[in-house]
Image (tube, rainbow, N blue to C red; front, side, top):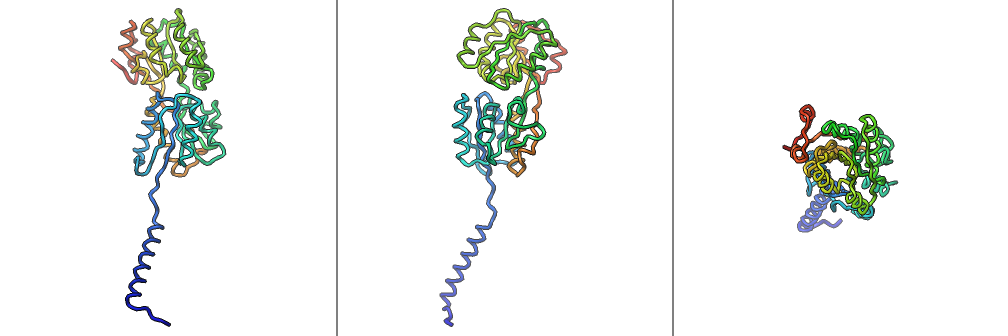
Length: 327
């Protein structure tokens, strides 16, 4: 047997040491990095995305270190949702965060039959929309935050602020599931309150232009439902309300800041934070099928500047119940 020289033994030792180090490095657990694709129907709900990222950061997900976001902003049209979702899926994401009912429904179709989880927020009625089987046991690959159930109370608060209200204008989009659910709830409340809803349908931006251009004269107030098309035109509705001194009720604080008299509904930033908790559980291995859909909190907000501008005095007993007031 031929013995190795001292130099050869040294060389072999170096090679073996390098090999051991390489194998040890390969066996070391690599830091987990989650890639989250975000699809958003409208920039109006960018606060949901901001809240989601804040919530994820609070849970230890640091952007650029252990989490990456694939996000192009609000797409603006239903037609743009399909290619946006396909682009997100093509980037090998670990989870899809879908903002709005239309985005969630498209994400459901795109991920059907796969193991790619989807967390949604906000969706007005995820059961009626068909994205989950039930709130307690979603089934499939989706779970998220439900924001429906406040439309009837929104109308009740409007009447509390303006007790002489009898005829209320509502812009409705029959193609928007949130608008449909909101109108059903509002009709039930209107019947109990002896209020007549003056409903004008608008399925397209052109039809919405016609509704605004031919706004009825004989209404006492304006009710804006969770209708994406109407909410995107909130400044136009506020302008009509202020010109005609009409109380206007809408669904979130952003519209209050835009000049609505009152809002009752979810805080979309907090909705995003709430969704982050579900995303964290999914990324850690819990199946969306086993994560119950959660319901967001609702908040009453009042704009006293708008009340003064339209000549309306807010009853003290109502004002005291407000969560937020713009003075």
